[in-house]
Amino acid sequence: MDKDKIDKKDHILDVAERVFSDLGFDGASTRMISGEAGVNMAMLNYYFGSKEGLFLAVFERKISSFQTLLQNIGNEGISSWDKLEKCIDNYVDRIIVNNCFQKLINREMSISKHTDLTDKITKILMINVLEFKKIFDEGVKSGSFHKDIDTQLLTATIFGTKNYIINAPHISSLMLGHDIRDEKFLEEKLKPRIKKYMKRLLKAYLMNDNDNTN
Image 1 (spheres, rainbow, N blue to C red):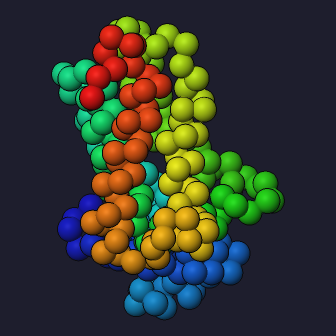
Image 2 (tube, helix red, strand yellow):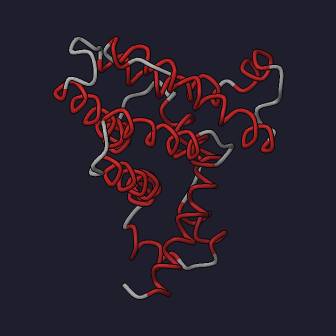
């Protein structure tokens, strides 16, 4: 695919991400998205096939780019803990933001109804969960991490911290004493704070006692 086509496809996905985050899957339409993107319906259908195809493409683009980053870290010749530190840094940098994609995830995954589309979204989101699990398993196998760690709850801790802070902004703003929708606060104060907290928490839980140093 040549550069013009890639740029056009990315532009459509950018617009679709914003529209879906504002209106949800059910409230948005491909005609609305094509109009805001300045492309005709034929082009949108050519690239994505349907509204569901476009919706899933929005998720796949975001998740696959982060998956590649996590996989590259996982393949580095460094300790399991050093890999996990790098993953946490990159994870927090990407998800502690007030962007459309985080809003979209919250909107769609909090809907109580269970559909085939929900299953497809969940499968995409699980990709990066499994990348973290690989690092945990590697650390256990090498003896760097305790052998009896609870991988499932550990993963819930990592992703759940973000969900509580970002998806409940009114509560977390009161709890933290600052509006978390303030971009400067997010970048300069909250991100470093979350990184430090998660690393100290995970190190205390994961590392064998003789390795659990500051």
